[in-house]
Amino acid sequence: MARVVVVGLGPAGPELATTATLAAIESVPVGRRFVRTRRHPSVSLVGEAPSFDAVYEAAETLDAVYGEIVERLVAAATDGTGAPVLYAVPGSPLVAEHTVELLRADPRVDVELVVALSFLDLAWAALGVDPVAASVRLVDGHRFVEDAAGQPGPMLVAQCDHRSVLSAVKLAFDDQPPPRAVVLHHLGLADQAVAEVAWADLDRGVVEPDHLTALWLPELAAPVAAELVAFAELVRVLRAECPWDREQTHQSLTRHLLEEIYEVLEAIEALDDDGAGSGYPHLEEELGDLLFQVVFHATLAAEEGQFTLADVARGIHDKLVRRHPHVFGQVEVDDADDVMANWEQIKRDEKGRDSVFDGIADTLPSLLFAHKVQRKVVSVGGEVVPAPALDLDSIASDAEVGEALWAVVAVARRVDVDPESALRAAAVRHRETARADELAPADPPTPS
Image (cartoon, rainbow, N blue to C red; front, top):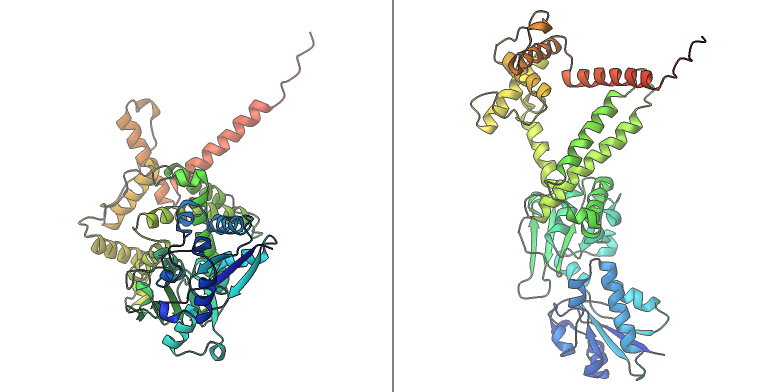
């Protein structure tokens, strides 16, 4: 039967390769040797063997990479010569080598494994940890959410080969990150680094992560919050593999974002007042659609190296703490009006604004824009007096219509009604009335 000999090159330089690995390499002719990647410090032991690095660069998914590698190895082993094929992988063939798993399950070839040291051996030595005594959980950085969900730690996170992997790990902890994190980089090499890092700096350049980077989490403050991170990972996959998602930009998504906002508003307005809660499943669904838009925009920004979803969450968390000194500080307030006054002053100080009117978006719907302006007028001691009953015959210009709407907004504010929602509700009522009239059966003709 066709045979593939799989050897591990060890976790670092050639000095850590085993004699069994060296003997297996020598037993297979140069022309029948392959390496998974040439990005490894011991790859020179195999000679000028072709690698599968180009497969990684060309394929769109890791599953496609693994499948293509296996097919090429099987094709080489079953070429009719009867000679075995050598497949050399970093570290140990039995640690984080999915292609080896697939090969062993393939009925077309017989697989011979030559075990070797893995990065795990160097990690335990660098950390001074007995993994059995500490009950360490080993997880894949690319599957951190799924592998770490619900686990209390400690954990060694392997294959942290990109900043996005470290960002995903960081994002997995909402408000209770691990008290410590240790980055393990280039273990066994001259530039080995074992560095404890602040959680906020995990993906911010303490080291430049690559295929020889891992992360040690000795303890967790709380188990990993899986749902949000799993959703963020789903959006990342959609962005990578769905043709529609790949085409989107911040600008192209604006229409969808606006639509989702209005659908959330519609779901809120449809909530029952009887306490039965029958409208909440609809609201839950619409909030999920809106969350998708938020995560999508954060994913696009992360691709550009601007910010991640973790940065968005941390930013709003810190901003809300700053703007609630009566909750998280020593400021005392008497009522909600004091809260809003503090909020406006803190916001002005943060933004360096001279006026409370700075920062009101000109792109807001006009009624909402007027409502916000009126609230700001009142917040600085002014007043907006509703106009008396409107004389429709006297309104003849854009300016006069604008003044009439302004007066209506003032009335809405006086009675604490959202004019945008009120107008929408009135339009819906009139629409339904008109629709009922339109669809009502016509009266039968009167007999002559």
